[in-house]
Length: 370
DNA sequence: CAAACGTGGAT
DNA sequence: TATCCAAGTTT
Image (cartoon, rainbow, N blue to C red; front, side, top):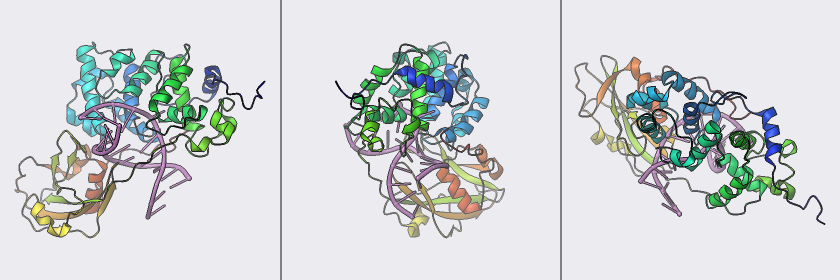
């Protein structure tokens, strides 16, 4: 007969759900016990939470919901209003897909989100994880919502040796085996809460984990070595010039980026191309208008997911009758906070003008966890 | 299937 | 300062 320490036991959902009932996080988009979840709010939160921390999402979620309280109001809104509400959150294709999804729900589903994974999966911006999460959380359907938390928890429970992302199908299959018939929605949220507060990437709190007993990695003392990952290399530095034009009537020259690609649909000051071998000394040929350009000392640094960026800022002042070049426009300085300016461009404005982002997002609800 | 796609907090 | 990481999706 095997000794208890060596016998791998299947993780019991009851143990996790009992822990969840006592320690569940109280989050703005989460229904209280007994309340019915609102699919619109669940969906909105899930999109915002993609690759984004709880602390970063909270203020955006509150403001967004205030501005677009229903899927109908979101569907009817102009695209630039949606992009503006998303500005600063990152991954802006999410905002474009969010808007398209709201329209699809209103036009093709009578304003009600479908409740099955298969139907949800057809909507823009909803992939395998989000389809399962919305089906489980908003409709209490049995679905395996596998996010980064679940990958970590499950890879430790079963000591999955295959590194991510190749391990995804393995982890998905293992997760499907432990999703219970009863309370699948709470189970999905419970595993994520466990990953966020107990089964953390570094120094997991195994001693107080409801699944310590069945955890194979813990039994081997190797919990921090899972999940295995193949590491990705950081991109090459790109450089460019950004042009801040201050007109005498106190307005700034802006343009909207094309809808696809990096910062798609977002607003920016005119810039040169961003290239590894860009020479700021020759930036004048890229300037949007003729003027007495002043090169500002220092650079603006910004890090995107796949490359770091270094922008040299040029500043010019022009008379108040200066026309905007093709595809550009003037925005009064005091209205800049209403523009869909990404973080990199806000840095440029601060560098050039000393300040700018008037209503700075909101306080940072510290603590991604607990 | 690998790469593109933002941002800020934690260590 | 450097690196990692956070409720992924699309192409």
